[in-house]
Length: 204
Image (cartoon, rainbow, N blue to C red; front, side, top):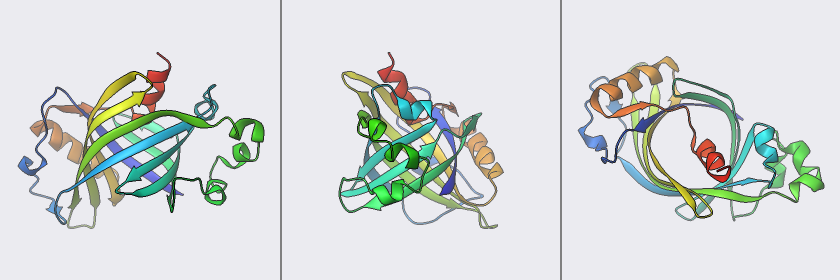
């Protein structure tokens, strides 16, 4: 289990963000900007039992690789999302139940009446551009620019956001970096995760 700490910023408007144009003199860029295509399928029952238990389950595909992820709803304020997360790579698009039983899903998996009803409920499909940023004190932050869609049946909603994920260091640096981005870009704090966007779509 890891504590995921990230600050989300929604991009206001349809303009594409050019990460290479950012001026961040206090930060060192580690490596080149990376671009990936991420497709994630989220699972729950028709009655949204997992959501009622404040836990999420997804399977993500990227470059032919698979990852299963469990997250709690955690704490959200002013765009800062803090939650417990369990991630495990998969050889195929099939659940590793042994790993899942090490998460809050354990009692659900052991209850066939619930686990047998788990099904795909919505998908996110987006392109992610990332920069790895560092400070002299060892702080490491991943800056990710995501653009794509949340899809639930015939309904869809645009994804257009920046995520700042703390990899090492003090979480206060996320807010400092977010403030700097707000001075340079048309962005504002976002309390709505992609998972929450999906649940909102299927409830419409």
